[in-house]
Image (cartoon, rainbow, N blue to C red):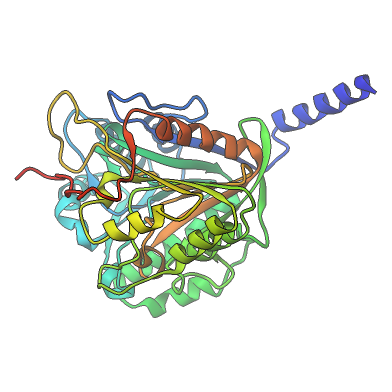
Length: 409
């Protein structure tokens, strides 16, 4: 019997190694300089991005919130690689959000000096009331990167981030559907123009009903994708908020969450209890919930909501404050920007969205949901390094938190 088991396991390993599965997923973590972070389960984003862009042969479609570079910093090599790809004949298209054009304009103009580069600015506030907050790019319609990392030099060096590289034609085409719709809407400022892309899919998208098997660190996982905003996507595509709520509702034992921002008061001042209610319900039925928030969440209108949530039995919340870099203060950096969740040690979600209403209902965002212990264990490793690390403290319900300085006075 033991001999048969060994033969079976060897056969499975050989099938995986031989590339039996059509897809492969790699975890990609940005580690802030001079911190104790860094998981052996994850790859470096600079290396992954450069490898992906340098191997592009036909097309490179980039959709980002904004672009922010600084001479001599890591993103410079990435942007140069984009220009080199375009100059060797790769059709390159770039979308950024209008809200951050002050930051993006110079870098976009520089990129457009290369051949085969076209860029458009999308006014997502006009289209849906929010922002284009997704961060993804597609190579040759065969693989995609998606995660919390903006095209920002600080996201590669001074911010804790998490993303995923998905080698899959189905995943690439799923994201390409969103990109093509946003590309057209960026030109027309009319969300009706998205319909021709949303109603006609001549492929099998990666959804909850039609997931795809993939290799993750040598093990099999099943994954699907989800998008935001809820009303500006193909009907077949899953929505982020529905997936997150569903995972929490169906949790049996444990939920681990890390997001930068958690708020039940939206930017327009309206109350939104959808996530808060399901978290409270899960905790009250005995699910152990541990949540890490960035210190950027504190010092404002969300404080009382976070403090009240932390008082629910089985609900523990910690606030992370990364130390300033030895080189001095760096604006809009040294922060936990990851957005992910692990449920019952078997399901892992990586997202581009913060946890407040506008990110799910009026802004563009994306998530990867992986089912399998290998993916859950990898994200747990990252979570526990933060949860048990030197930069977090339990939320203090008696403390009057002050806003974190994000920019120079």
